Image 1 (tube, one colour):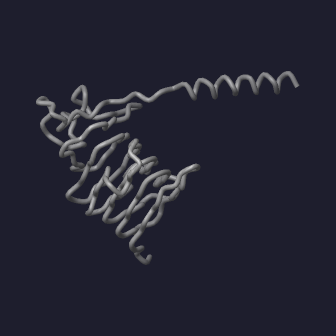
Image 2: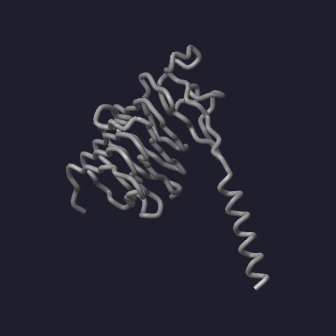
Length: 192
């Protein structure tokens, strides 16, 4: 009995330590009236505080945007709390990437956080986990492709609106998060 109690106390301490860990954020500064970062690409190192892309345990924090776009594959975690980001072509989320939208506004039909009319693909050549999480916000995708299996390509939905024109390459997983009231709208699903 004593050994079991000690294990339970040890587990409680470990859980408490894990819960106290906080994320390290690198702030996006591109096209936010910053003369040192005139480019608006989310994937350009010059547009991040410290002039380096988020890496390791750091997450890119996008809190303000003005004419910001995705110009290539996102290979780092991003947390977007406001603003509008677009892509004129298709974009890819890969290699340990997470794209999380958590906007405090709740009038979802009146704004868009992420607009990719050409399509958004979750894929990585190294087969790591990657996810798109809409905790609160509005996302418009012309096409969504989940190329990795259900443990590695995940779309999480809590509050807001996720609109997908065409859902193809359906190997991933959709999770409706507890307590959420969000909507996922899919116009068409391709046949296998």
